[in-house]
Length: 84
Figure 1 (tube, rainbow, N blue to C red):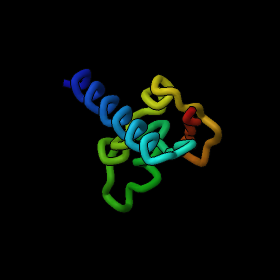
Figure 2 (cartoon, rainbow, N blue to C red):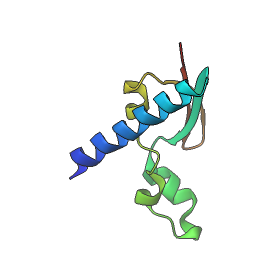
Figure 3 (cartoon, rainbow, N blue to C red):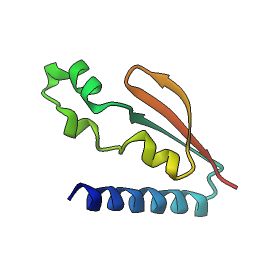
């Protein structure tokens, strides 16, 4: 099941990139959770767990889609893709 979900997430990311390209975007920035368990620990008081914090997809999915990590802020990775 996880492999299927990963394929769907990647297809959604690719579709979003293409839609933004067609709208004239020159770059795309995203803030993704590097380790959902770390993020969940920091927001435990709000009742969120690792699954709720992983909805952005892992940084590796973004890297495979041409994004590059340009910074970190706590459990978040700032990733960017420059469109040509």
